[in-house]
Picture (cartoon, rainbow, N blue to C red):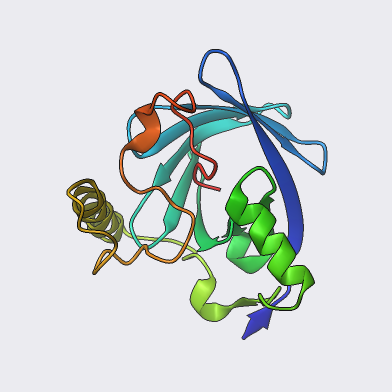
Length: 178
């Protein structure tokens, strides 16, 4: 199955307090702040708020403040698939996002999303915990110089190590969970 999702580009701006103001080209805005190595708390200009959690397997769990949960998947080049493939967020701030746009324009990166790239519709608590363990192992491997071998998250834009507290960018990376 191949799906052609609705593409929504966005740009991130690092603010003086080390939070990020995300502007989507469709007019939505989010203000995002990291809470530990795998969580980002956010609120938007439409009254929604919640937390994004980076799980293993490039899966992102979005929990809204009203209790709803949805999942996304980082598919590389600054692109994240949401809504079972209906929405593709494209980070125009990051090198990966700009590179993905360039390669897509040249026809070198498929603009369609395959079934293998879709995020899960739902996960059990046990499946989520297994993905958290995978993410912790990948982060430990990357921080010890082990690279991506066996981590399952290689080949994309993710900084799965805890590089959030670096001095050069105020603690923010270009791809913060799509």
